[in-house]
Length: 311
Image (cartoon, rainbow, N blue to C red; front, side, top):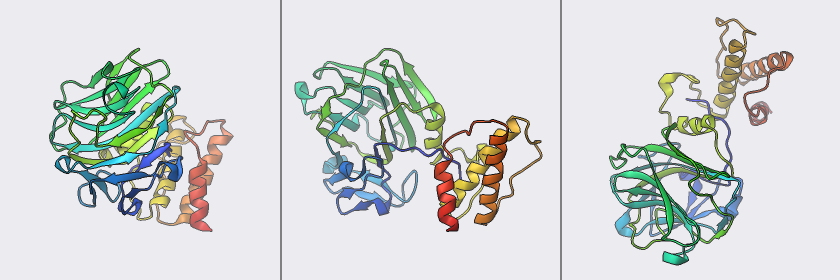
């Protein structure tokens, strides 16, 4: 089990089995039920082939399956998209936020498997006038392997694309995201009728109204368990909330070691006991405060989790 920095997007579809009821995908992001997704064409949640959690959405191109996302006005201050995907099909759309086909598709934002490569598009004004960039043009992505992708666009029109937690490509002054209403938004379908529906699986889709940092991108990737051998938090406890507390203690301990406030041989005592975890949490946090150290990230979700466990 790996530590993860708590992240909250406006839209977050986990596609876990508990988050899909009938044809409704529950939005677990800060936007709440206003951004619940809708399944069209009969896609199903796969509980066997998934990247994170208990499920991923399986889309079949020949059945015209997709997820519809409610109308959305994006911010021009900076946005990020994050998702896992797996496919063997070239030339298909992973997501598309826009306003219809052809020249009416004003200011669209989309991610595509272009040929066999990962490709990102924006349209400024009307499509088909567009800006597009590839993420790692040497890396085919149609090999039926799960990959984690993040695309960030900042207010200076700079794009960064990450694959599996690492920067795949970065481009300066490409194009902005304009603050216009986008009414036709999809996972697995394009606003351009000439581009095929997506064929494969998508998991853990996020839309953030901020630019993710490299550490936050890595945290999302680690949720897929791909870096367990690098030992960010090599503990496994059955209670996921308790494990977050343990991981937070581990990160605090790492901060103290790096600052020479504790010798390297001091180690966190790991137990399924919530009392021991809570004690470690309080002691390590107190040490950081005593030495005027900034916390590595927001402590409150972890304190809340601990209180819930012990109340």
